[in-house]
Image (cartoon, rainbow, N blue to C red; front, side, top):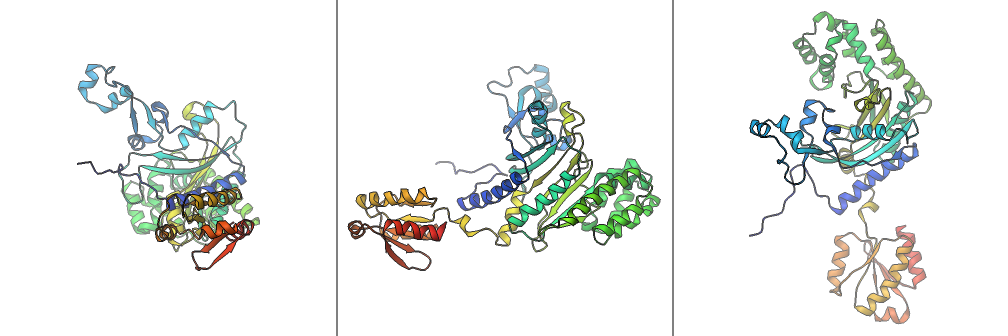
Length: 460
């Protein structure tokens, strides 16, 4: 008995409709990447093992998919290493390559490797799949796409301004109105730790603070105390728990709170600049909000931190994020190369558009016109018109088999094809075509030029 086919856990098949909708999102994002001057690059699906390992921390390294060497991969492994069964020692001897875990480290590798060919600042975008050996669960996959844009070789805050505008442009084009672009700055978080008098507790403090909207003030304070942050230190920063108002009002409060921290005030100054520029060129549909609890990517972000929240009517997590990193390429020996980048969460954007019914209907109808097949002579006559229609950009096809009329019509209905063309002996004799609107049921008999004109008006 044949084994029932399946796919690996954490992967997905996509139907024609799903692929069409995903392509709609990706093409919209790519269009705006190009409008903002970003250039496309692609990197291999797999990198050298040494390129990826040690770049994501212990947990991240564990989630990298390793690729066994070709052939007899155990042949060159010393007996003592094999007998120990220590995966840490064994893996580098049987693995030379690994599937990419994200697009950021391969991008850093690309910049260093091609630095003499690139013009800096270098603006790149990249839309490709990545793989993670994670435990599959709802919304978490082992294979998924990332849509990234980065600028390296510039410390200018105008880049951060443009990323805010880029987010707004993309989500406005997708019809996803009411997104909130949250922004913070790593320097502000470092300033909090300085004001507390416990700079060594930066990570513990910010990890707890990041949970404020989920568990509330009292639980956050309890977690901070459990990490040996003193009550005196927490008291000094008590005002941040009640930080409110618009962007400018929060800036004013932060200046007072961080008055004794040079690095903290630098972070406030950077955010104030971004807000000032955006205020002179208001966003179309998104809102820019200062969120001091935002603490993603603390291991590598050094300046601005971004996170985009979906409209409140959709119960989703973030649909985008990113930030400023001052020295990412140093992991490959190129120091002093500052960069800033953002990403779009393709899968969550898809869910948001689906829930709000924002996908254009035209994306769902790949074929716009179907020619019914009544036989060889009729099919040949139809094929000539089919060629003309395709030349002007109409998605059209001929039903391949001379099947019953009902079967062919059902095929058109099931695929939501809006128009069919019928050609019989009468149409051939009169050099006409009968065009039927599958939605209204109306039909008309037309000459080829009129058929082309009518179809062009309806579907293009």
